[in-house]
Structure formats: structure tokens, C-alpha cells
Length: 254
Image (tube, rainbow, N blue to C red; front, top):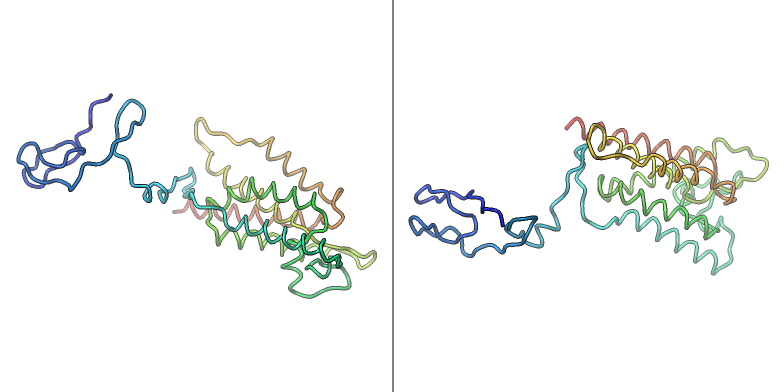
């Protein structure tokens, strides 16, 4: 066991005493009501922090991002809403347009730009997007927080849908639905933020190959999911990359 660090100054006599005693051994003055509980860390003993304080204490990343320990509520909500809409669509047997999908050129309601990224008819499509969000969306949310991540995910999906409609031709009929833009946006934002964290740090690296494989899988989703759109996916990834750059620049400037 290592020697106890003397780091507490007695206010009565000015002596430096152990932080683990309740009374000053030199003058008998009361230092605290009770001695702190000890726990082993490495080869020594340190005072145990209260549970609430340990839960709330953030870990600071390399770029100044506070990595919170809270649950990723925004990411969970996006996946849950999409799953509920899919179950309802399958249970009722109604067309995708009744559950928020965008059918070009027949449906141009503004609210469909918000709902289309969360509407699915394919369980496999939703599964791939959910896995990507669980990996990258949670990482973004731990760094940016719940509200910012929610805005980011909605923006990636909405702007991707708008771009898809702008690029689509009226013939043949095009159906835009699903969150490949949301997933690519989360991946791009996480990659940019994480790259800023590990830049110049010894012993920390970024699995570029793994991220690239995930990105390629998401980009190629339109080959397997008929409602996934190429333009929506790439536009969502572009929005996520811009958001990651903005967040990194902001934290570097602090």
C-alpha cells in the first residue's frame, strides 16, 4: 500500500494532515464529521466518491467534449418511433404513404419531410439503420447531449428527404422513406468528432477501416431496400459531417 498523501490543511493550527482523519492530531480540532470511505485503486487507497457524484462526473475527451454517462434518449427515441410505425403499418396493411412516407410526385405535404426518414416497410432496412445508430448515434449523443443529437438526427433525415425530392424525376414514381440519411449523418458526425479527439494523441487511434465498411454498407442500402434513396443518404451524411466539423471547431475554440 502506498504512503497516504498529506493534502489537508488544518484551519486551526495550519498543519498538513491526512485527508482520512476526522480530527487534527496536532491540535485536536475537528476537521470533518466522519472519515471518508476508502477503496483500493491500483497499489493505494483513495477516498470513495459518493454514488451521485460518480454518476454525474463527466469524462473529458480530447477535443473538449464532455462524455456523459446518461442514456442516449434521442437515439433510442428515433429507433423506437421507427419500430412503432413499422409495426402499425404491418398490422393495418395500409400503404406506406399513410404512415409518413413520401411518394413523388403525388404527395408533397411538408410534414412528410419530417416523417419519411422514420417510415419503413422493410424490417431488414430498419435493423441496419438501428444498428448503425446504436453504434454511432450513441457516441455522438454522449458528446453533444440529447437535444443537440435529436436536432442533428432530424436535420439529417429531413434535409436528405428534401434533397431526394429535388433530385427525383416525376417519372417513374419514387418512394422515399427510411433513415439511411439519418444513419449516415450520425456516422459522419461521429467520425469527424472522434478524429478531432484522437488527433495528436499517442496511444489513441481511429478504426478508419471499420468506419469505412459501415459507411459503404449504409450507402449501398438502396440496392436492397426499395424505399432507401441514394441522394437522401449522401445528403444526410453531408449534413452530419458539417455538424461534426462545427462541433469540433467550437470545442477547440473554447
